[in-house]
Amino acid sequence: MKELLMGNEAIAVGALAAGVNIVCGYPGTPSSEVIDTIAKRKPEGVYVEWSVNEKTAMEVAAGAAYSGSRTLVTMKQMGLNVCADPLMCVNYIGVKGGLVVLTADDPGPISSQTEQDSRHFGKYAYIPVLDPSTPEQAFRMVQDAFELSEKIGTPVILRPTTRVCHNCASIDVPELKSPGKPSGFVKSSRWVIFPKLAYDAKSKLFERETRLSDMLSEYGENEVSGSGKIGVACGGVSCAYTKDAIAELGENFKLFSVATPYPFPEKLALEFLSGLEKVIVFEELDPVIEDALITVCGKYNLNVKIFGKRTGDTIHAGENSQMKIKSELVKFADLKCEDEAADFSDAPALPARPPILCAGCPHRASFYAVKQAMKGKKAVFCGDIGCYTLGNAMPLDMVDTCLCMGASVSVPQGMYHSGNDAVHFGFIGDSTFFHSGITNVINAVYNQAEEVVIILDNSTTAMTGHQPHPGIGKTMMGDVSEKVSIEKILTAIGVTSVRVVDPLCLKSAINAVKEAAEEHGVRCIIFRSPCVALFKPKKRLMVNSDKCKSCMKCVKELGCPAISTKDGKAFIDDSLCNGCGICAEVCPFGAFEEVQC
Image (cartoon, one colour):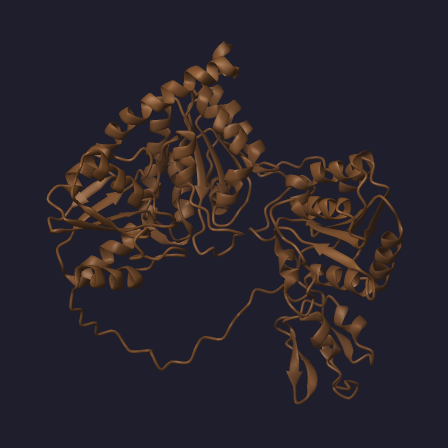
């Protein structure tokens, strides 16, 4: 039956339709909904987990694929860096069951530290890459990826981007049945990587590249259409934009839709380039298709000029759109375009809407407590990846550095060993602590660093959609498991002092920070308070205007989106307030009063 599915849902359903046995990964926007959907829809016999990080997920997936299971491992583009070690090795070793690596890229970037084009990784690692342009194509491609993986005995990367992951389309959803039973692990020397195996495998991978290129030239998702004298090549979601732009222009271009950027379908590219004088390339993010076409032209001595990012004819960073591509096509083909679209040139600019912590977020209280405790003292505040990165915004201004997952704990160590005389703080979330914080705390203890580690424990993986983690005691299969105690881990690895404090008890929180700052070694404060998005508030606050003296300390120091001003007084929007009560503790005049919901 037909269903309206988000791209990630379409990928999930496609994997289940392909008979996937094992699904694992780590949450990261824009990929997270794939595992969430599989967990909801899976038939009997499918195992699904949120792993502690992408490296672990890849190693679990490798073991499953060695055992004949069809396995899907999911992550965003930054997670591909984390799992690079096992992924590079498993491609040399090979697999028995199909192994599909879904890495969702984030052009923009919309919710990531960096733009990163995972197509490069495929070429670097000799791993085929499938690049869907629509949710419908993603649904088909994930099934094709399993088939290809088993046919050539290697992992296959599926690389949707944000607009494919979060766009919606009508999909013919088949009846989802339990997958076949895996054949099981058979002992063999082929599963043990060592230098001689790697040496032999590298030659085979190199030779396989040409055979795969020929095979993928016949792959139906790669397509040459049209017969114009001007060529347009595109990949991923840019194909959808390009087709829409060409349809609007009503011009006849020769179009090359590249679904497999690596190995590049060279024979099909030659067919496309035949009879052309110039080609423009639209793709996100880097000039992967553009460079491949330049290589083909050079290899076969073709007098075709390739235009794109290298020539400055298309954008170098960020997302494409139908409007951008249409505009660039008009210039490239020297067309006269009478666009009847409305003229918005005189419209005012949209107001800036910077991302901020939610009203009532316990992280705001945690940052504020540390800021108050360290007033007048020299301190450095190192942040991490999660909701709490938003602690960088004014008026909190509590994130001096932010690099990558877990780095909030390790960056201060480098500062300390460089002789900085400040008190060094590292802010890390509970899920991120399990992902990549534990090893960094061990490093700090072992190498005798001076550091205060602040663990912001809101009992969920909030930024990516509230997925469970080892500290919660519930798995993605719905089983109840033993909660992994952060306190016990810290004590076991030698942290000198561990305090557990509710950040919404502001005075206690400030005192805990003051005490920890005076101590030596690696010490830790766990600020534990649940994410406000998970619970309905039992109380809200209002401002007694008679008591409010218009000092605006609440507005200037907290930056809570529920607090604004009205008629010169502080004002609380009761539709936003979650009743955390920090404003009441900050107000010097007692103007904030509780109201029961």
